[in-house]
Picture 1 (cartoon, helix red, strand yellow):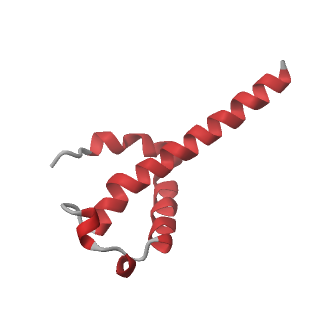
Picture 2 (cartoon, one colour):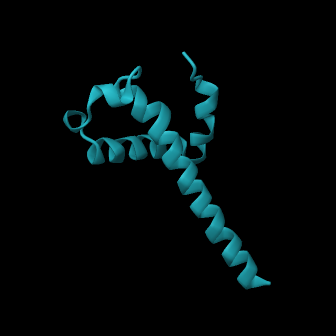
Picture 3 (spheres, helix red, strand yellow):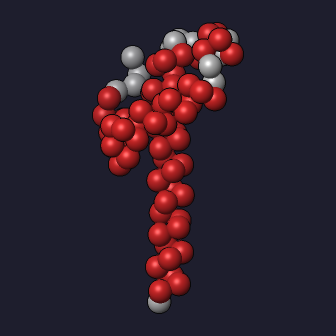
Length: 77
């Protein structure tokens, strides 16, 4: 399989609880019955959410956090 657990380690920035919250939010946004399995093939929906969507969402949240941190730092100088 082309995905490794090592590629998911950055999600740890939000910890296990953060990962669970992101995953649950994605399941709420994309209920299994609303997704055509062919669209996420060869993964199943759970694998797609855990291996693709959770890391992408975490990346975006980290990027947003960093942008705000840089803005605050710029205002302090």
